[in-house]
Length: 302
Image 1: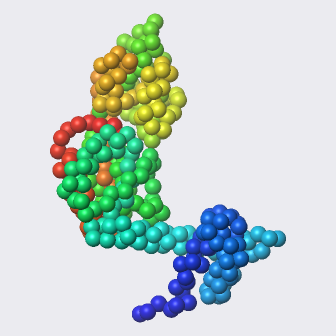
Image 2: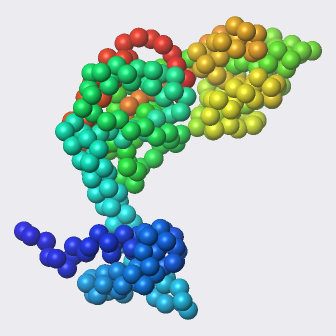
Image 3: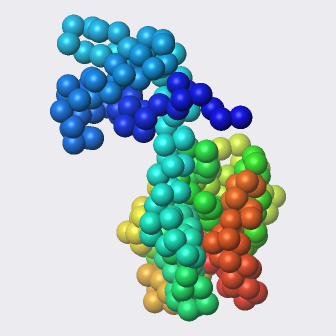
């Protein structure tokens, strides 16, 4: 059945409403959309008339959305993002499609990007767009077709491909151990500890391997391996780093093992994608190619 035109507002009016909710004023919305404030007001009034319900109230010179309009915008924003993404794919690469991929910064730089020339040679018809994300997100509110994620493959409504496991070891600057004796794993608790924000259970998991009970491991927190590595190099504490990432600094003597060798981290790297996109042609080509890349056993960091 053909939907009623009443319930198919123009893109211009929906965009104006979304911008007003996001930016908080008609003036800011007009500037963002390269329109005049009166043009934005006309779009909003036309939308209100078409739907037959009040969408905003006047507070002096300000336009304030009703609670119902705010809820409406949440759904409209997702739809506008989907339209934008579909149009971008069609425009950029109408024949082979494109793939918007969220990646982890260090893993993407050290493992994925060096391999991408092979993918480009195998599938020149596919355009691959990369953006970094450190935390899991909702595919319904982000314009990504897939993501490379570390942890468990437990995102609701998704399918996944396991890429890599990872081994870690505690490292620090040699100066941090001067005058100290680390005879057993529990002795590390006497040293300042460095943490990765996205892996809050990394240290407890490491201590559990050696049967050391720890309710809480305190210390400085960093958001990426690049920054925590620099902190360890400057003697700020002991960092639990992927062995591959620490390899060069260990060989050069800039870092030393604080105790013991490598242990396997809980979790792994996964390619994750919405189940609804499983048959997407560009995604199918990318994950099929990526499955072949997992045959070697490099244990790499994110």
